[in-house]
Image 1: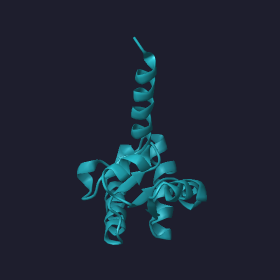
Image 2: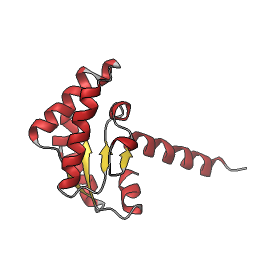
Image 3: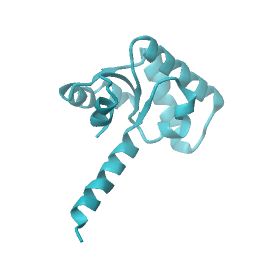
Image 4: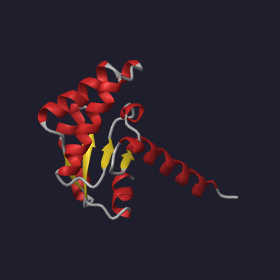
Length: 127
């Protein structure tokens, strides 16, 4: 669903913000590549920061302005490197980063998948 939303917007290259496991692993990036979407990752220090904020702050309900600012810088760097948008590949990232915080579209994978599930359920519901 995330790749479909990205392609529907006419984009083919996006950044990814998620846990280190998701960013470093091949499953997510490989599947997106199969669907025609190239994934750009933050620098290694950026990946470490994104991961740390998710686990040490967001998972505990802590929202820090300095973490939002750091995420904004990471997104700006991804955009400078050619990302046309950014996938929020972890539910908690949506607590910190909002569309108005950045200059590129955000693709909240959890919301996209939930909306697709609802559409699927309603299509199958029948009369």
